[in-house]
Length: 161
Image (tube, rainbow, N blue to C red):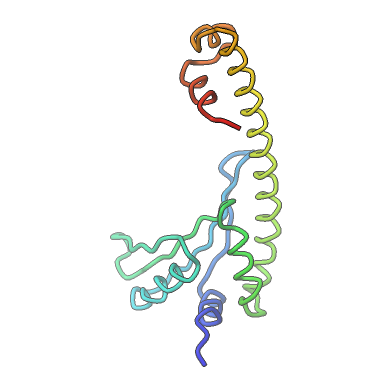
């Protein structure tokens, strides 16, 4: 019986690439790529459909090459890890994946912590701005006192906890 997930994982073991790139000292992004001859374009679309995201492209500068790219983020990293942990066969690619995965998990944990801290800061600002507004101050007056722009205050004030 044909198992599409096993087929895709085997194809990726042969043709895939896991990498990450540092955008700055504080931010890096993780990418999963498969690049093949255009005759295997249908396989790339099958990968996209199965993994639930990413994109397939062909570039004019390389007319016979097709590429599948998926940038991994907070929203999709757990599903991607689950797929590769389950289906990627024991191979050198699996070893590369394990190194990539450990860095990915560490970075996503840091991002989730930063996102939580930013949410707490935003909620605190929301509470302070709304308390001042309830005391009769306009958003413009709050902005002058606190050093916020009007747009920032409106963004924070319209976000409720």
